[in-house]
Structure formats: structure tokens, C-alpha cells
Length: 70
Image (tube, rainbow, N blue to C red):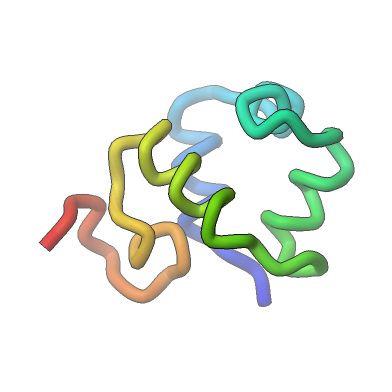
């Protein structure tokens, strides 16, 4: 399952996959596989991404279009 919001928010901030891979301390390939849904995102990774971007986990998982926490 691809996560369009995960990719969109990265691109909106003019970040490369390598930039976010560094934040998560994973390889660029691993992050790419998270974004395209090849590898499932762990709870820890989702929390790090939500905190980094300041958005809800539901937004990152395409469960809502609202970036803010409820």
C-alpha cells in the first residue's frame, strides 16, 4: 500500500528521501520502501515521522486529509 500523504508532505517541504532516511536512521532504500508500502511502517517509525512533520499518524497513513491531531 502506497502512502500518498507521506510522499506529499516530504515533497511539500522540498525534502529528499535521503533526508528523511537520515532522520529515521535507516537507508534511503529502506525509507523508499516505507513510502511505497513494500515494507510496513513500525509504530516507532510512524511516531518519529508524525513528530518530525508535526502531523497525525492518521494523516501519514492516508486515513484523513487533516494534518492536525483530532
